[in-house]
Length: 78
Image (cartoon, rainbow, N blue to C red; front, top):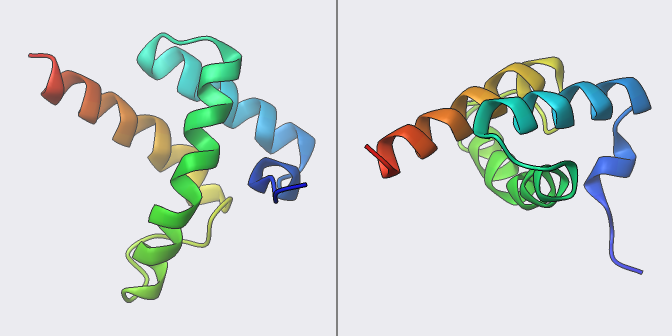
C-alpha cells in the first residue's frame, strides 16, 4: 500500500488542515485530502531548498497551505 502522508499527522492537525483547505477553496473533504497529499513532495522540495517552509505537516504548514491554495485559486480565476 502506498504511503499516505496524512497518516503521519496527528488526527487533530489533519482535521484542522482539511477543514481549512475545504473552507479556503470551497471543496469537499475527499478533494481537500487529495490536494493535501499531493503537496508533500512540493513542500519537501521547498524545505530542501533552504528552509523555505517548515517540515511537511508542521504547524506552519497548517497555516500556509490554505493561504497558498486560496492565492492560486484567486490568481488562476480572476
